[in-house]
Length: 193
Image (cartoon, rainbow, N blue to C red; front, side, top):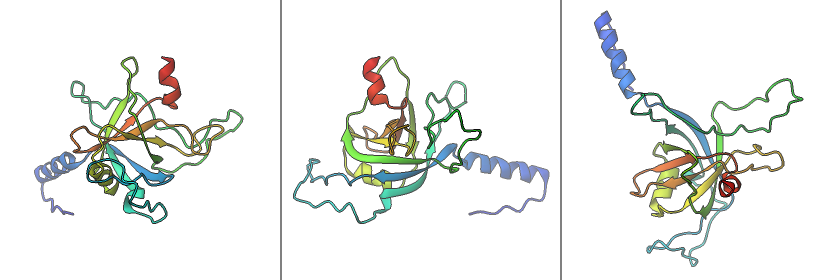
């Protein structure tokens, strides 16, 4: 951390300007692994079935409290988003109030490799994850063409885990990991369009 000793209005303005430049706009999310660890990869990038999977030992990447960067639109300077992160409850019109919820959404990810889904007719949101043990683990797998689906527990009416609303995917250059946010239950919706 850094402290400032402000003696004049001009110094105050300079300090505030300095702080504003350092602030990253984003949303803090709790990422939690759901289900087994992925199969280990060999040096050739293919699944190495001879190496054991240790799903029960907790790893730092299994649970991360991290920022996703919300970048402003270059033309307007305002961030644009098309899809929300689902709530952790199913709406009930008979309930007079909303259930309590955490300040930071808990997003669960499944380590089952799946194909990224995007179609031209439907917009999606893409957010870069702040570097963390999770992003490091995904990038070390050197697999930019696979993704891990993300869920919010209790967001579905009949399902504990809920339906996927997007996925985590390494960039093609393997420099960062992005959260793609799509419409809720997109694997069912997209083929219908």
